[in-house]
Each structure stands twice: as structure tokens, then as C-alpha cells.
Amino acid sequence: MKKITPNSSNSPVDTVDLSKLSAAERTVSARLRNPGRPDPVSHVFTIIPNVDTESLLCHACETLASLNVMTTDFACELEGSRRNVALAIQQLAMLAELLVNRALDNLDPPDGLPEVQPNCNH
Image 1 (cartoon, one colour):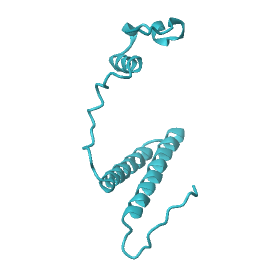
Image 2 (cartoon, rainbow, N blue to C red; image 1 turned 90 degrees about the vertical axis):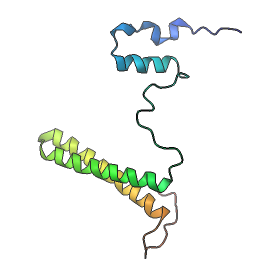
Image 3 (cartoon, rainbow, N blue to C red; image 1 turned 45 degrees about the vertical axis):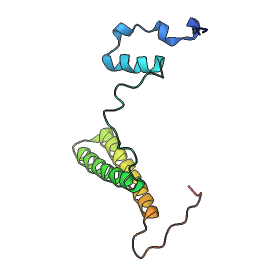
Image 4 (cartoon, rainbow, N blue to C red; image 1 turned 120 degrees about the horizontal axis):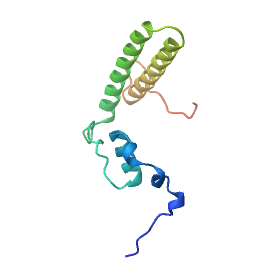
């Protein structure tokens, strides 16, 4: 079996002193050096296999609604540019929540509303 040796002049890993990295940086660095190695923290937050799309979207919508409330409350405690950043995050959360709600409506239209036909206009 032939061993492939990377060209050391093209390898940024050789120039990094791993002893100076934090534990998190060492973990990320190890993952980048060896992509075949399983990620040690990938199972901390796991979604049960075979969960239906509607359930995933419902949970995403609730999470985004919570994020919306938290960032709105947080923005009320800030002033100036920091408040503007918090409000921008809140608006992105609201936009994502609207998109998820539309996806849910497309999966199961509310009573009385016609089913939305997909189109490619963005």
C-alpha cells in the first residue's frame, strides 16, 4: 500500500503550534486535519431520525419565535449601534419565522385558503 505524504510547503497545519490552541480550537483543528474522524461533539444535539418535515418546521418556527422575543427584549436594554444590531437580528429571526410558516402552510394549507403553487420568483 502506497502512503500519500502531503507536501509540507502547502500544509498550513505544519506551521501551527497546537499546544497554544484552546481545547475547542484543537478539536476543530483535528477535525480539519482528518475529515474522516468522527466529530466528538456532533452528537450533543441530535435530531431523531425519520422525523417528519412538518414537525421539524413546527419546532423551527417555535425556536425562531423565541429568538424573536429574546432579541426584542435584549434590544430594549441597549442603545445606539448595539441596539440596531440586536434589532437587525430580531428582524432576521422574524423573516425566517415567516418563511417557515409559509412552508408549513404549503404543506398543509389552513382551512379556506387555496393551496399555494410553487414558482421560481425570489
